[in-house]
Length: 122
Picture (tube, rainbow, N blue to C red):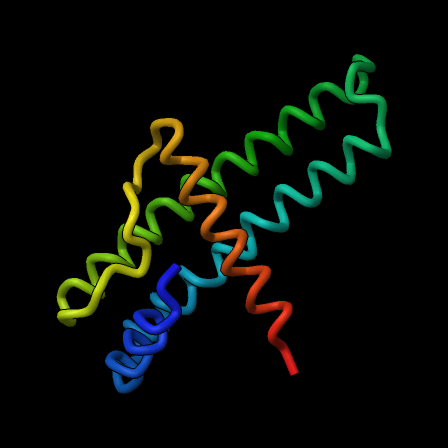
């Protein structure tokens, strides 16, 4: 994730509350995706995922994770379009696709970005 582009994009739209909110929502979707992964993995460790009574819960959590992943892909595309319109380099310069391995590569970049934000907090 190109943090300089993200910052420049925020600076470019800071006077337009709708665009600023769109950027904020896109960036917050990254944490929603992270949270859905973490929640599912913790829950799987607490349950016996192969037990019939837990399979439905795990499947529902996996569907939620997939929905959040799809949201991230859509939001990365949107941020890249906004950056392009502003004459900035892409926020993510790889291929944004629902196909493997690109889907996972975008996810890995987004998760690394979330981790950087957390680690750099004051």
